[in-house]
Amino acid sequence: MTQDATPERGHLLSDYDFHLPEDLVATRPAKPRSSARLLVAEGDKIHDRIVTDLVDWLNPGDRLVLNDTRVIPARLEGHRARGEAAARVEVTLLSPAATPGHWPALVKPLRKVKDGEAIVFAAGLTATVVGREDGQAELAFNLEGDAFDAALEEAGRMPLPPYIEAKRRADAQDREDYQTVWATNTGAVAAPTASLHFDAPLLAALTDRGVSFTHVTLHVGAGTFLPVKVDDVRAHKMHAEWGQVSQAAADEINATRAAGGRIIPVGTTALRLIESAAPEVGRIAPWTGETDIFIRPGYGFRMADGLMTNFHLPKSTLMMLVSAFMGIDRMRAVYDHAIAERYRFFSYGDASFLLPHGTA
Image 1 (cartoon, rainbow, N blue to C red):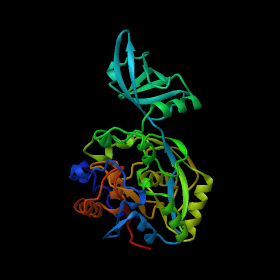
Image 2 (cartoon, rainbow, N blue to C red):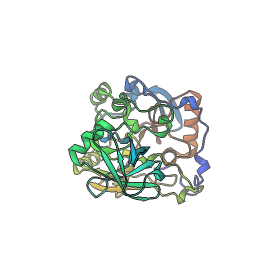
Image 3 (spheres, rainbow, N blue to C red):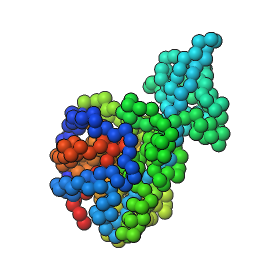
Image 4 (cartoon, helix red, strand yellow):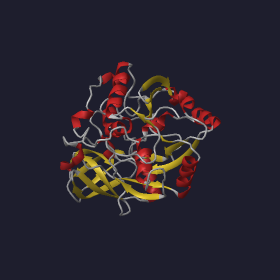
């Protein structure tokens, strides 16, 4: 199903670079959510629409696959106390460790905190540095379970992407804006941002159209924002993220495929998960575990017939993914058009709907 038959094409990081005017980076979402712009790439054709028009591009019997992960307020500000000397420390939690109460985290500045020292946050929350590796620290918190969740809710703020946080700090409005309307399973430290465009009226309109929905879970990690540091992208190692496709979800997807409906993940996280759970073309199986699937040109897609996604960072693995899905030349044309027409980019920006084989 991929448009790039030769895996050698697109192996250079520079193949995914482009110039983006700084003022096209969105720092707040469209209001209402479904009023954002929607670029529809139907094969080689490009159409300018808005997200509410999605209903016109879907057929009765199609199925949208939605990631129901819930973002935690994973960014914490605290201080390290050493005698009378205090140092301000910022912590971004990454994912819960196997040991209860332990979290790997990005700590800035890590050099100011020694192993065994405590970092004190608001809401009675403290963490002790118990180890470090590859620029990350492992923190042991003084609270677990519901007590930890309650303290984190009070002390933390939403972990907006670095390119937004550099322009403004997360605030109370982001607790609503940076969460999908169907968020259920807590564990992400980044939102599945294509899903942020959906609201109750759009979901109702899609239901009336005869479109079905399946929920899966992939806890998006901070690694989604890590830069690719190799010139030959074939040497890049993806970060792992925990996901789950239930038996019911697999049955729904397989039934839709058998009936001739299209399977359309909303967001690259949902796409990566269903591709990880597909043992062969056209069939998905129940699946639980960590996936580090790296989708780039040359990949043969097994499940996804279309993709709704936001506009991605230059030289990112997500830019490689959409280039695998549509073809490198098509995606260059899509992004050239989006920039010329001043679409808003990245997590709070506008959306694209990608149909590599045109409309069914």
